[in-house]
Length: 334
Image (cartoon, rainbow, N blue to C red; front, side, top):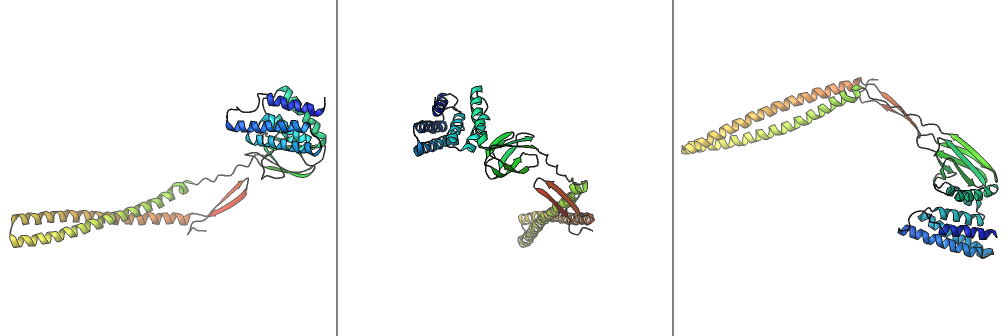
C-alpha cells in the first residue's frame, strides 16, 4: 500500500475517533471541529494531487489544523498537523508536534507507539535538544524568552542546527542559561541542577524602633490635635458667655426702668447662664494649656531619642540583584 494511503487511513481513523478533546456541545468546539474536518478534506485532496498543487493543498490543510488548534488543543489535530508538516519537509516543527502529542495523558498504547515511531524516524533529519532538570517541571525557552515556553522539563525539542541559547527557569530557583551548538542528526543532552534562590535577610526592628519612638511621636501628634480641639471648644464657650453677659446687661437696664418682677427674673437667669458658660470656658482653657504642655514634652522626648539613634544600613539580596539602604534620621549623631 502506498505511504500516502496509510496516512489517509490514519487521519480518517482520527476523524471517527471519539477522542476529539472536549465535548462537542459548545460553540468553540463546534468551530474547531469544522476546521479539523476541513483539514482532513484538504489532506485527502492533496493525496490525489501532485507537484505544486499538492504542496498548496498540504499548506491549506495545515492552516486548517492550526486554526482548529488555536480554539481547542485537540490530540487528533496535533497528530494530523504533525503528519502534514512531515509531508512538507518541515521536520523540526513536525518533531515538536509529535513531542507535544506524546505528552498528552490517556493515549492508547497503539497511538503512543505510532507517534513515537514517526518521531524517531525524524531524528536523523533534525537537531534534537534533550533537557532535564533537578527539580523537574522547569520552563524551557530556546533563544527568545519573549515567546511562549517550549514546555517543561524533561523535554525534547528539535531546533535548527547552529548556535543557540537555552533558558531554564523554575519559581524559587536560580535561573539557568546555557549556550549550545546543535548538530544536524545528533541529540544534545543538557542536564541541569537548579540551585534554590538565597533566602533574603530579614532585618527586624528592635523594640525601640517598633514601639517606643512611634508611640512618642504619635502621642505628641494626638495630644497636639486634642489641644487644638479643646481650644476651639473653649473659644466657643467664651464667645457664648460674652454674648449672654451682653444680654444680662440689657435685661438689668430694663429692670431698672420698669421694676417689673419678670424683668428681674430674666436678668437673674441670664446672670446664672453667663456664670456657667464662664466656668466651662475656664475648664476648657485650662485643659488646653495642659494638653499643649504635654504635647511639647512628648515631642521633646521623641526628638531626644531620634538624636541618639545611629544610622542603620540594610542589605538585601534577591534573584534580581542586591541593594543596600542607609537610614539616618535628621539630627542623628554620627
